[in-house]
Image (cartoon, rainbow, N blue to C red):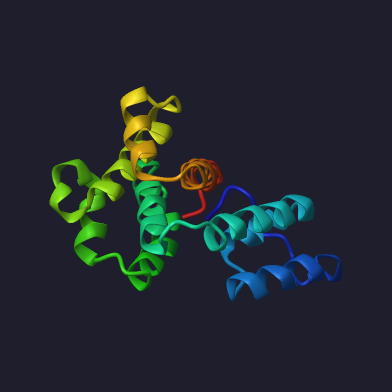
Length: 170
């Protein structure tokens, strides 16, 4: 049970944002139910995460591998449960998902592009600051736009997992 109760989402005041969430996500996930305590935050969250998930230029399988890796690093099972099926639908393999817990020991499952993105993800998630060799590896493999998109993707999903963990939404 999360630390905050779910608000009454049937309230007419919440109808516009609730309907936008359902339209964008297919249902009213528990995370969005909690966010409806603050309609302005729910609106901003929906817009940011929709852009990060659906409008960036990264390959969808890589995007989802990054998100699942963040969920594993931050012990956010809700986030992992939501994104593992998406990762598989986008072309990531079950072996890759299982290896994400210790991808550095399973590099054969990830090409050099994915390895650079995962190393960057790990560094941003664990240390915030990224050492120059990790940045250079990323920059050598991705365009400026992609580097920015990976950075915002990692930052956004760290935000997601931290909210989930702090509010004990599992």
